[in-house]
Every structure is written in C-alpha cells, then in structure tokens.
Image 1 (cartoon, helix red, strand yellow):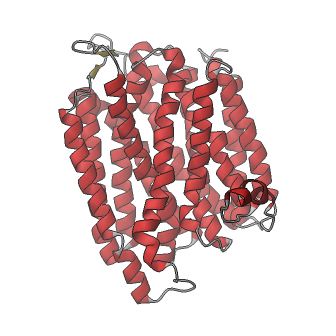
Image 2: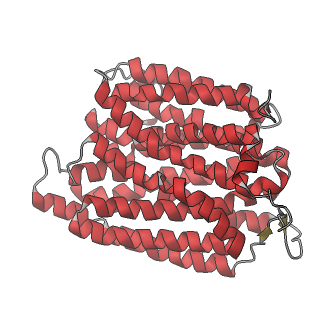
Image 3: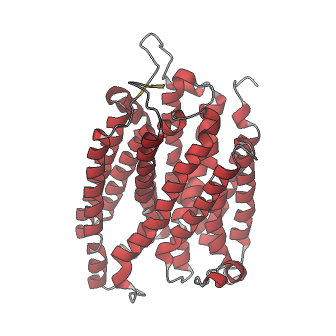
Length: 432
C-alpha cells in the first residue's frame, strides 16, 4: 500500500485530518454509554434488552467490514471515509423517528446503521495511521489517535448529559408517560445537529488535501486480498480474535458502567463512561511516552492483560459499599464519592488503552500485499463489542452477584490477550 501522487513534505496535515476523524469516531461510539441506561429508563428495558442497544451497534462490523474493504478498493480511501460519514449522518437522522415513536426496533435499526457507517470509516482511516510513518512506531501514532478517540469518549457523555438530561435531574422512580415523552423528545435536536455536522465534515474531507492510499495488489496476484490467504498468517488470525476480546472488554468497561452505576443508585450515572474514557486517555499518554523507548509493544500488551485480570478480581468480589479508592483519589479533588467497584471498572480503561495500538501493528506485520484485507479483518474484531455486553447481561442473570457477577466474562477475554502477547503474535505459521 503506497501513497499516490506527489509525496507531501510533511505528514502533519494528513495526520491532523485523520485525528479529527478519530475524534468523530470516538464521539459517536461512546455516546452509547449514556444512551444505554437512558433508553433503559424510557423504554423500560431489562438489562439484557438494554444490551441489545450495544449489540445492534457493534454487530454491524460482522457483515460490514469485508464489504467496506471492497468498497474502498473501488472508490478509494478518501471517498470511503466520506461515504462512512454519510452513513453516520443517515443514522443520526433515523434517531428522530425512533424518539418520536419510542419504538425499540427503530432505535436498534438506527444503531445498526450507525455501526455500519463507523465500520466503513474505521476500515478507511486505520491504514493511514499505520502507513504515514515507520511501522515500529505505529503503536505510538495509534496511541495519539486513541487519545483523541477516547477524549471524545470523555466529552460525549458530558455533552449528552448537558443537552439531553439537564432538565430531568428531579426525575426518579417509575416514569410517567409525560416524563417518558419529554425525555424521548429531548433526543431529536442533538441527533439532528450531529447529523448535519457529520454531513458537512464528509464534504470537507472530500475537498481536503488528504493523500490517497492505493493498494499494491494487482489482478495477477490472485491470492492477494483473499481472506483465506490472509488468515494463513497466525499472527493476523489470532490478532483478530485478540481484538474481538479486547473490544468486548472495552465496551463492557465503557458502556455498562452507567447501567451498573444506575443499579447502585449513583445519581450521575450518565457521565460514568467519562471516567473509563479518562483512564484510557491516561493509558494512551503512557503508551506514547513509554513505547518503544522503555517497553516494547508486546510487553506493554502483556502488562495490560495482567492488570485487566487483577481489576476483574476486584470488581467481581469487591465491596459496593467501600469508598476507599474514592477517599484517596477523588476526595482531595472534590469529586463525588463513588464505590470502589465502580472505580475499578473505570480503571479497566487504563488496562485496555494499549491493547488496540499494540495488537494492530503486530497483527499486520509481514502481511505485505494482504494488508488491506488484514486491516478489514482486524476491524471485524470490533464485533466483540456486540457480544461482550450480551455475555455480561447473560452472566448478570446467571449469578447470585447480579450485574457485579456479570463482569466474570472479562476473565477469558484478558487471558486470551495475555496469550497473544506472550506467544500468539510471534506465530508466523500454523505448523508451529
């Protein structure tokens, strides 16, 4: 994959454009953390039904990633980005009839369309970050993009709360129909505004000086771009699985924390995703500072998996009435007290931050002409976000610990990520 046309003197402007797109991706994605408990109240959903809000968003990746690669091959990366944002704009508009009718299926369809648009945009934009610089420093560049993505995740719940929930601070207990109607209607103008903004941004990208990336694949290379040939590389195939489990734990940590906080009676449940995203931003900053100068990508991945396992133990068997961590870390800052278990869910953001930046370049290493298909397959790993919350919801119902016990599903996820860090990324053939 090479950059066509005359090579620019600096990659600063293309990287700045890509950074803006990562911010948009993060904003649209991490709205789900506030939307899930919000719709749970309006539509009176069970925890499992609420998890379908996330499932419909992330399951789009399963069927949209490979078609996205085909679309990008035909129309180019830049037009692919614009088309992805156009699809996201359409999804934003679909939330309007969903809010007006309060039909759960329409919300799920809007989420499905939003996930499809984001998948197309992800497939187009990720290779830029890897290719606009040396491969060995790709994790650092992806970390920079991650800071913007997760910073949007900090801001999105705060904006959601300010624009949509500000007038409902006194709503508690079972909602009346008038309160439900009022809360649902409050979604209309924010999503309309988001749709218009994303549409304008799509036009701006089309007119931007962003260089086109052209695949090195040719018609004579029959195996190039073929899924079977790509999956013959164990580091790529296992990387897809690792990202599947990573996105599962990332979404559980970021998008179920609000629902869990609501069950604990935490008043500001709608902003809890911001805590997880803030921890991820800190993790990305550490990654930029430490990788590869002080620690390799694979060792950082190993540390992340171990930290995730330790935090999972604390979350599942911790005391919801203990505020020790809050007394030490939050009280001096004047921040509201939160249970230790809730804060440990937020700390998962710190454990998760380096996983995507480390796995993506390790998985693409040595693919050559198969890089485009490999990137699409890795993006398919985002479908873990569809199943993680479902498993969490199912486990919540299956254990005596309720939602707290649901976090048991994190264990196998972090164990596989640890395996990939220790061995999986080194495997170049399936015979060893």
